[in-house]
Length: 161
Image 1 (cartoon, rainbow, N blue to C red):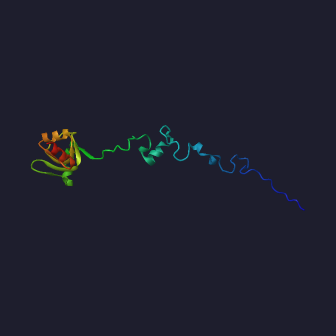
Image 2 (image 1 turned 90 degrees about the vertical axis):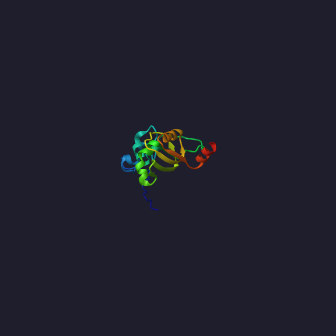
Image 3 (image 1 turned 135 degrees about the horizontal axis):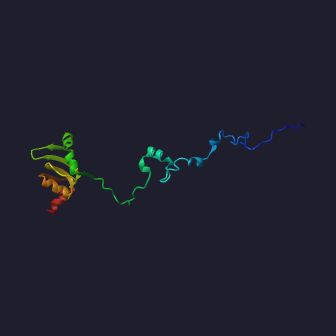
C-alpha cells in the first residue's frame, strides 16, 4: 500500500499575507456600517449626509411631520376665489368665455366657487356663485353689482327671507 501525500487544508480565504481574505482591496468587504448604513439609512431629520440625495429623489415632503387629523374630519376641497383675483383676471375670463361684458358691467359665471371678500371691487360685477362671504357680498353690492347663488345655498337663503 502506497501512502499518498495530501495537501493540508487551510482555513477558507486566509490568503497570501495581505489581510484581505480573498476579497481584493481592503475597502471591498466592508459592511454597511462603514458607509453610514444601507438603503435609506441615515436619512433621518438630524442626519444630513444623505439629505440632498433624498430631496432630489423624493422632494421635500420626505422630511418632517404632516398633520394627523381624525378619520372623520374631511378636508374642505371646495373652490374658493377672492374678489381681487376676479378683478385681475377679468380679461382672461372674457377670453375663456366665463365672463362677458354687458352695458351694466361684467357678468361672470363662477357657479362652482365660493366668493371671498379680499380685495377691492372697481367694476360692477354680476356673479353667479355657489356661496359668498358677507364681506364679498357687501363689496359687490356697493360697486353696483349683484350676486346670484346657485345650488343649496340659494334655496336656504330664499326660505329665510
